[in-house]
Image (cartoon, rainbow over all chains, first blue to last red; front, side, top):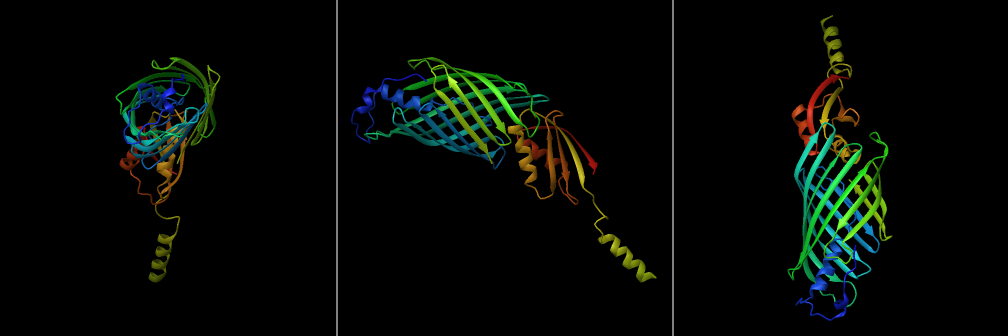
Length: 231
Length: 97
């Protein structure tokens, strides 16, 4: 993730009258774009709970969602950027727009959207209403997987930030049901508003039954560590 | 003699050996490519009290469900449960256990 100019973060801003600069807004929006994981199964089975934690360098997020029915899930998302002293909290909805189950593969298209509040964790709180929406598509069989996601983020100052992500991977071995499964991915990210628009990461995914862990490293040398569990 | 016949008949009817046996149901399913995701099928089926076991076979793209004796799980309900888990039922075949 590229660094952003946040010199104006130190300014005192009236809590109820957000007149944040464009730089601050973009910085706030950068918090949303910190995730380096492709969420496995954004919509689970009806009544199922999913907990997803993501950490990339000094940015962490936690999403807990409940699947209402086979079409959508509703959750609560929190994010904390310890480097930029920013936090976000708000609801998120994941919706299946399309799914095709073929004999040996599956294709999905999801819409993920949310809105909430972002604020400084150090100094003046400077709360801002903010939101995001993303469209993602994936195809996988038991050996290969490809995924693409496009995201837009915005806040009450009407500024917007965009991101595109593509991930491709393979399973070095095809595990049976109940085995420990391993996948290896390359992920590319384009964030045109960032100082470092193009980034890449190598990620290893392990999952066993309903627990999934990802670990990797970005081209900037930053760690990627993600965890999911389904109930 | 008549009484003995009646008693023996009643005992046979009460015997666990008499009546419905377990049923094995083979379900061909499309989209079964991921263990992590397919756990949904096991979860939704095992939540029912009349399912004894569920085995997901990713190689054969099939789910084998063993129903307890007296189970009321019909094909329509079974299809709905697997569809709700995110998959497509292609064929259901019921076998006596």
